[in-house]
Length: 265
Figure 1 (cartoon, one colour):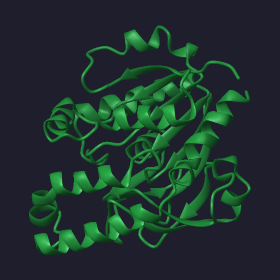
Figure 2 (cartoon, one colour):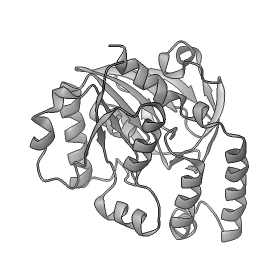
Figure 3 (cartoon, one colour):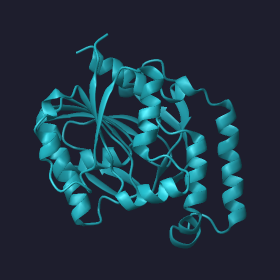
Figure 4 (cartoon, one colour):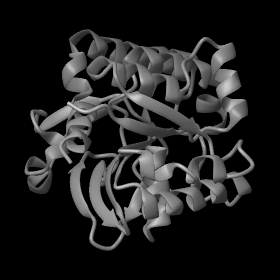
């Protein structure tokens, strides 16, 4: 088994990550590193944030050395036009030209889809707040290496208000649930093979609960997802019950399958 060189792209703004740390919450990059280390302790990982670094040159100059790229979550909304989002889309386009294998998670999938000509909008069927229930793998997904050894129907940590509504040309739809028709996809664009997930196999339910508490005011007063703190506590109880029966290796199976995918080629 060869050593792998991976690039993790941090999708959150630096200020959001600083707020995470003040509240004792791992950044999404830290969660990814922890989850990857469950399967491999020999990974060479670099991290890049297109929002906070003035130039792409530091990474572009050595980008072809990476065996794969993982692009994680963010609290941003892709349809809000701002310089930070434009920079992320621009960097994804550079990655399409240079990196063969990309795992795009939640925000990462939304950036990849947008950069490849698809479309993302606010979800019309509500949001996932800490958990996505009854994700079902379709016939295409059952044949795809992303879902090797995965149950056909499963729950997963998730936190999203937006969804993919138009796939890039040639993309294959792999899984759905009642909230988001597009829960996972696979497509090829320029030099890249992209596996996209709307949910978060790399994040624990414990972290999701901390995120809900961290975003409590926003969830009640701005997002209008809950009417009261009591409703939030009831929702947290549901996630805690799922956490008790969830098996870590099955929850993160997609990560293992992607690592095997890049290791094999």
